Amino acid sequence: MNNPPTEPVDAWTTLEDEIVHCRRCPRLVAWREEVARTKRRAYQSWDYWGKPVPGFGDRHARVLILGLAPGAHGSNRTGRMFTGDSSGETLYGALHRAGFANQPTSHHRDDGLLLSDVFVTAVARCVPPANRPTREEIGNCMPYLAREIGLLTDLRIVLTLGKIAFDGYLTLLRSQGHPVSRMAFSHGFYDALSGPLPALMACYHPSAQNTQTGRLTPDMLDQVFEEIRAHIARSSR
Image (cartoon, rainbow, N blue to C red; front, top):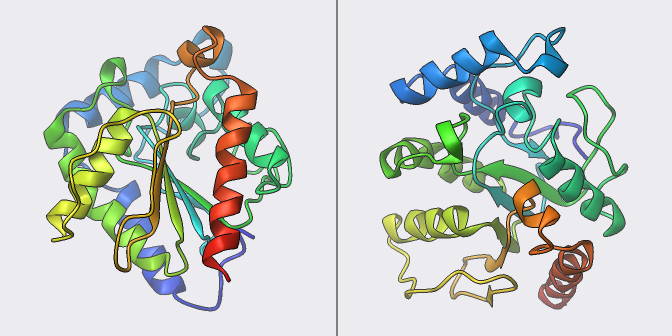
């Protein structure tokens, strides 16, 4: 579950502290703090997080879920990945149905949500204007993602949510010297990859735009997690 293991607590604590205090991207710093100051009317009583958001979940996870960036009034408000907006409700609802989460809702950091065998993070840690971080801003965040992955020593599969996360993860692998071939994003994409790398899957992002238009349905998301369960079973034999 989410309870910190006996090791490597120091490495996780150091990494999370560096993420939370990061100010590498002036545009994102200005925007995340502006959103936290002005707030949405429905959340005027909230003390917005307004800082970079670290990853969340089981530190012995075999599944890494990689999103785009915090939502302006979701993670940027609550301080936890995919928490406080419709994207999180969709994602954690599916994780609960698949047996990876103890509850289907994700409202705030102290709501009792626990993940089992799953760690959730993103290629960008600050909310970007129009949900569009620049290539340079994503690059600035990549060392954090690399360090998270390095600490997740039991990983078997990475699920990327949306094309930006998919492309960002492949860029990271290539920057580390892994001979990854060119791949095109598509929903349901799967590649076992080679060597010590975890397998790769892709899924449409669970954004309101995708779910409200029917581009991504609950059944489609459930199928993705069924395939992830099957991969874990195969790789554990």
